[in-house]
Length: 108
Image 1 (cartoon, rainbow, N blue to C red):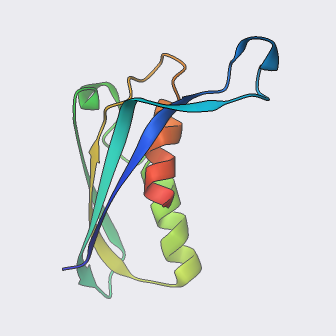
Image 2: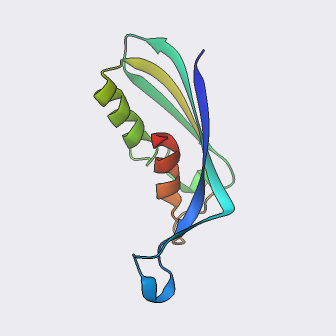
């Protein structure tokens, strides 16, 4: 079974007078995304969400972790069955780059 585990840290792009120009990644919080290939020949992604803040984010098709994975599969022309696990460690809704961390980890 092929698998990848990636960690992406929180970020802030609202640093005083450098609003949306200056940004920083911080290691206080992070998301982990694990992707496992469980089959081939059929495009199917199953997502499970856990972690400290997992209950605060959607576990369905509108989760930020899915779009980069779906795009990568489409570009590569791959039909894979994937099991994706998101361990949500960046608190959502607080300006800390929560959805960005999930997307960045998945894109990696």
